[in-house]
Length: 506
Image (cartoon, rainbow, N blue to C red; front, side):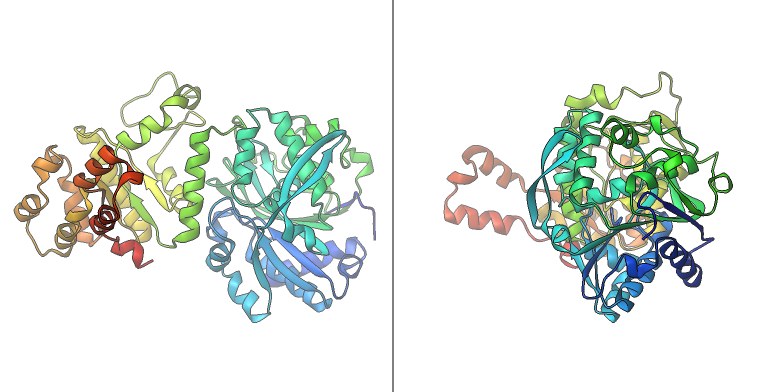
């Protein structure tokens, strides 16, 4: 095998399969051929970036063609490829299905696995010791081929070789470590390096044919780079990517930490470049994000967990139009942190991305729709402008997803669901709808504020879900508490909360 600190840089214009095969063949040849990396009879984990369910065109996940080409080469070597990750949101099986790799895997008898079954291990970053949990499934294979996606990252500047191995940490333990960091970026990057030391891959191939810029690791803008990179030392690969992106390594938190603890190779004189020369592949205008704090507060953890569980359990997109009474109190404790980048001056109709303080156009928001299975749109109840925004978001969501959405409204309790269904079906008129749902008594706000939304969902046959619990149930639980209810009362509770047909159909 060639130098362990070498990095191969190969031009690949697009994801045409023959071009990808040619590029990956060149990369393996630079390191003595695939036979020097993969041995017959071994179990090989292909570790892509499966951060969340999205299309390949969004550039949030490793492209399926890259995975397919390498998996077939492993099969040809007489080894057993396994595709696995632990997504930040959702499940591996749903992501595989979304990008179409599931059909290929089934055809070739390749297992697609969730990297769960966490196992606690001792590992180090330099002289610092860490006790971390890592997927036992990742630890038990013979070989790991790391398949990261080159993306901007709002906390680490960009993500590639080293960071992708963090996907071997099971489930929401990844998010929990953000909370553990207490906004200490040094601790967090050292932890990532310790994790990398524990599950160091045998070989890494970076999908940079199409990358993500401006924002990341999700919600950024696709950017053509037309490169595939490969090597053994993930630090050396990330160092070369800093050169490609025209970034000083001192600006890259992971590279700074790796240099401090003498992990991997960053000295350019010691990194042998194969394939394209660096001078021909540098990108001077790749847009990297403004860095944000590394820490998560408990509310962000809860939000992340809720989103993760929802995406694991449901495949259809559901749009919830909820009021600020739910969201604002939840985040009140962290308001100072959330607003520290907020611009000092805003004008009417400005849209502000709160984490960065940047003003964006409404058209820019639509790229986030694929990133969310639950979208909260807050309101001030008596503010007409708030409801106009809700309608605009709903119209954009409908244009993108069609009938595969629903609206959840706290204005209605579960017993009124049949009347909402009748309204959407066109079976009752407006007067009858308001009478049956007891709008004035149950909600009380001027119906004209909401009328355009109700008319639109009726026209487009978009289901409305009554979200609130019946008042008698709320009162009973308030007075007695769940533990003090009799068996008969618990039985009545289940009757009062009827199942939601839209969710049942998913």
